[in-house]
Length: 142
Ligand SMILES: [Zn+2]
Image (cartoon, rainbow, N blue to C red; front, side):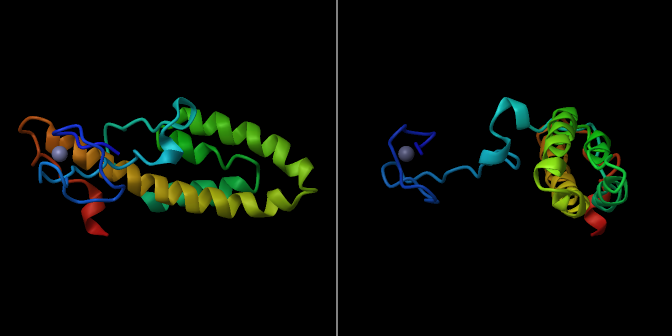
């Protein structure tokens, strides 16, 4: 990675630049490799989502092959289509093993994605002008 202040190359994971001494800004949530590509990029929703609801949708609907619906709840249509297509191929290819695993995978992933999205919503609000206090998101209750 490169220092965003002086442009000098720095060790991965450093907290301060060895050249200019300025602190590196933390990468924004959702900037991880998994979400770096267009196909998997996360859309910041306009409001926080309940991770428990997202996980329940993924788990219970997963048994009738609608686990990807949880991604619609999270506002991530690209993930809906991506996982919808993957499961169509994964179930016959794994002789049904994927059928048993997918509800669990959807539940875990949608739960984590909801938490990540909520962080992104909070970060976006903190950056936004002024109207921070109107309704502090439900994420705080956890
Ligand atoms: Zn620097």
